[in-house]
Image (cartoon, rainbow, N blue to C red):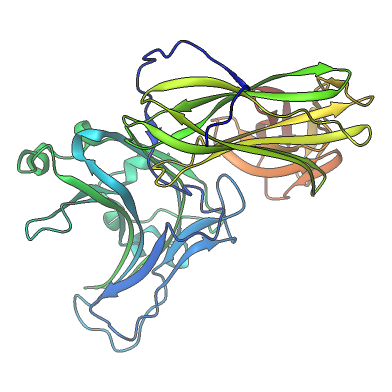
Amino acid sequence: MRRVGILIVLPLLLIGLERVNLIKDHSFEKDSEVWHTRLGGTGFPNFVAIVKRHDSANAYSRSFSGSGDNRPKPSNTWSKYNENTYLTQGFIGSKVLTDIDSLSLAFSIISRNNRFEELFCAGIYLHLNAHKENYWKVGFFLKAEDLPSGVSPPLVHLKGISFSEDTMWHLLEKSIFNDIDEYELESIPQDATLDSVILQGISNHWVDGWRGQKVFWDDVRLMGYADYDVGVKEILEGIEDTSGYTPFAHINNFGREPADFAVVAEILQGETQVYKDSFDWSLPSDTEDTVSFSTFTPPDTGIYTLRIYTVMEPDESDADDEKTKELHFTAISEPVTPIILLDLKVNPICTRGVLKVSFETPKGQVVNLTLFDCSGRRVGAKQVRGYGLAEFGSELSAGVYLVRLQSGSLEVKRKVVVVE
């Protein structure tokens, strides 16, 4: 039932339908059922390739990434023997080709024996009209021009280039209509149904031996337009009075259809939930409202975390479902804006060896500490909290480096010169 008496009504304007990420759980950080794994190829049922939805050995954005490991060489192979790894995600509702416009992801490759010539290939595909006899798989192979080296043709043909186990992450962004070959799209009707996205690793017994690689996938985003998608656009400044603190937020229906959903606010003190309020809501398509929740009176002073989120089934995108905000109470019922402090110190000149960095970060926040070489290539990264020292490895060659400490839109940079 719709909650009465707590809505500040905005005019229901057509605010222009927003593109959203149609991939759910795109950073692989949850053990959800939206990503599926399988193996394929001519070696059934004795596959030795390995595919994981979560692989903590390497990650781009958060704690996990998905991976397909096609490096292990099977026994008793023959010419054109192959093994494939697949990470796939299906879609809610009927997405059609004209609903989507771009795909982006982060990837990292570990070759067999650190040799490019023993790579085979990996690909990203869109599966269209999968439920019909005439279906299509269109997409992209990872190519050398997607790597900083800029070497081409595709990876399988590269020769004599070392590829370290300490792999870099590479960002790939493709336009669906501009980067897929025209001859592929010409035969596909514009109303073809988009059924799934497929991340594929491929290995093969080639003429000169076994070829394969391990590919890490992360932060996969397929941008387009949703029929069913609601979310939290912004947490607003709460109302403070003598009785406590009242949370406010903008909520949006980003979809093309009317939506009925729940809105939830909870406040945590550390890991303990000390407040929760929820109610049912509805919005016409492509509109936003402002909602408020019941008043929260903090049990004592300190730091709290406010989390506001929406719950709806089906919901085609989870990227906008929730927002969080840190609350600081210096006295009961008196939340104040925290002071954000970032500090970074490093000796501007150091000899080859361990590069030591002193940092200070906002209380309770995890912050990214990154090391770049003079070309802008990331050569090291850590996540840090609080204050202390961090070290980057002893294999740095002589040259100019940049250390960056970043928290949201705030960042501090320091230049350091490594000498022999």
